[in-house]
Image (tube, rainbow, N blue to C red):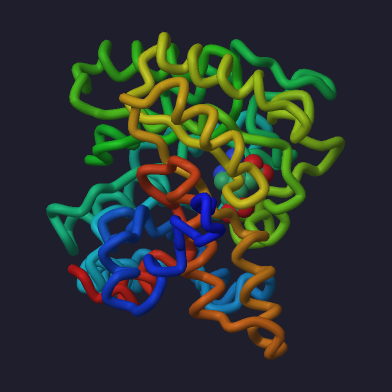
Length: 330
Ligand code: PBG
């Protein structure tokens, strides 16, 4: 813009002229309190250790979990999302609902280490079924209504072990409602639900499937996870989960779905919204930086600020602890 004499009247570069003024006008800020650290816990100790496709991430045993949790809290991160990998699997994922299964034991180990930690447990069947699907299978179909009953039992087992939050990720219709009534019937009305409401059938989950040993053994997840081409449907998914009793919502993955994050936030501004920066997003930046093709720290922080700027209130990221250490704001 210029005035009648042709002089520029608005020079936005003034707002970028030094780091002091840039700090003052920054619209989006990251904090260690924004992050949730995912953790993998194996029942079989021989399966513990590094994950090849996620350099820097490990699978823990119950005995290494407490130390990991201390380091997370030390960094300023106050929340974890737990994924358990059991010793044995069956077609119905029965073990997933066992009161003394790997996830309930991991929940107790986390709380023994840090009693104020926000413990969120992933509620799904895929790591517990021999076919690797997120529900109970009937022939080659996923039986929605049988699956949501099992998901509700799993959520109750996790909540009884002390999880403050359960995070159903199976993308079954009615799963949030079934879990809410299961929890309420068990007098666990204080347990919250962070629903993976908007979860896409994404190729960016590849490395996670190695970490959680949950690749589907036949077909794929496209009959239950969302089509990456759809955004209006994301609002419908979010709306249904809220009606069924979700306290917080999630969009997953993060970076390829920033428009979806923005849309869901605009539609439900009062509902806390999480975004999951998934394993493939992690692996891409790790791999490029290991090759010297990208500045790792700058790329990680930029990817996180982008997700927050789009509208996420919190971010589930494998770099949670690392980013919090860099921010140093705890
Ligand atoms: C299981 C689940 C998946 C992820 C989180 N929970 C895998 C999938 O749906 O196939 C992916 C997380 C990641 O890639 O980091 N339902």
